[in-house]
Image (cartoon, rainbow, N blue to C red; front, side, top):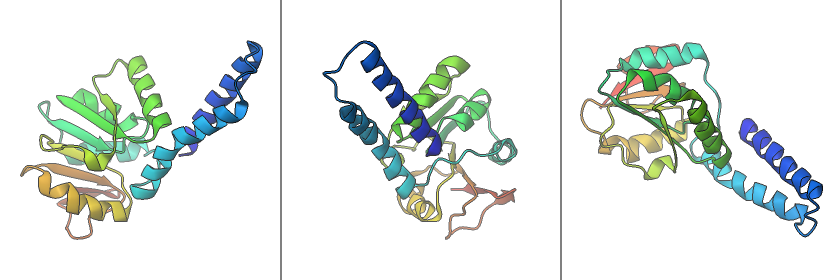
Length: 189
């Protein structure tokens, strides 16, 4: 959340500077500030309902990849992918890696990074609760406890048998993990 706020502040300051440099005084800086605030709102909603953006360590990324036991034919989803770091980490090992993000600044930053990384990973804008994961072989999530309960009620029943769910830091309360490594939990549908 802090990175997306800083990103928006930099963009907003740059827009205001361009307005004054090109003498675009007909545009009110308050308008720019309001637009920037509106761009932050989906990210605030996502932070409250699913969890804020908190980058994971490389050690956790390795544990998540290890527990997932990725196969070259796997289709992988990262729910609330943030800036896409983990999707980029998983992409070389799988057929398809897709990350969903609702925060507009984080989504844009992830899309920008995908251009520079020349990755086959896909960063998509969208609410994680309104997506179809029926083709998923692996789902990665770093969601707060309440969101993990919602995941179990909403998403879990739609997954095909054998789908591996890797949760960073938080357990699915009603299930016992198949494996655990460094606060990363593996579940199987």
